[in-house]
Image (cartoon, rainbow, N blue to C red; front, top):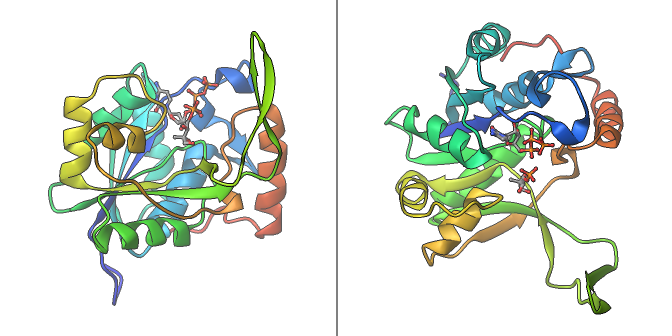
Amino acid sequence: MRPNSTQDTVALVPAAGRGERLGPGAPKSLRHLGGEPLVVHAVRRLATASSVAAVVVAAPPGASETVRELLAPVVMTAELIVVEGGDTRQASVAAALAAAPGHCDIVLVHDAARALAPPELADAVAAAVRDGHPAVVPVLPVVDTVRQVTASGSSTIDREALRLVQTPQGFSRSVLAKAHAECDDALTDDAGLVERLGLPVHTVPGHPNALKVTRPFDLVVASAVLAAEGGMAGSPV
Ligand SMILES: Nc1ccn([C@@H]2O[C@H](COP(=O)(O)OP(=O)(O)OP(=O)(O)O)[C@@H](O)[C@H]2O)c(=O)n1
Ligand SMILES: C[C@](O)(CO)[C@H](O)COP(=O)(O)O
């Protein structure tokens, strides 16, 4: 246990995706960045956050033991649980939530694909939930002009009110559990499920390092980000 910390948070890490947009190869969370799998980078940073007491990873089908062996040496100050993920991101989050230890009232949901999100971002999101917001998402402003294209033509959309949504997203545990129990629409994130309950979603500033590795170009960018931060490889937390 770290001194002077509020360890009331469990981080769920959906890591079971195939990574089709990244191209052929191993499941995305097991592909390497700077010599380590993406899931190792993501979990190391989460486990470094002072609010995080436990991490539950939803591993690719058949890879739970591999993921456990990869993560055991790097997660030393938080409880580590590995479960098998599902066919969709939503199913993987639900599987991880079902395995989350009961003593954590705050739940973060964080893509393994956002491998370099800094621990401070996780703590900022958890702090906003602790302050009373039932659902919290980190967001970045849109920096490009946005155009909507339809069959009948195209038009510019006012970007002032638009934001790009990242993870980790934070929730009060009861709210996330209710959202998953009551909504089975296929949505792209957990805040969308909570929104369907009619609850507000609070935003906090995101971080450029929390970029999602989706396509090959993103791996190039993430490699540069990792190099710029001096690498975190090999340091157990
Ligand atoms: N069945 C799934 C699908 C996705 N994810 C996870 O959800 C996060 C965000 O998903 P995305 O970036 O879309 O990953 P993939 O589904 O792997 O990507 P693709 O759509 O290119 O196959 C990733 O950490 C991914 O591993 C998951 O746990 N289970
Ligand atoms: C959850 C997420 O990362 C927030 O931006 C995003 O919605 C995941 O989308 P994907 O299409 O599953 O990569």
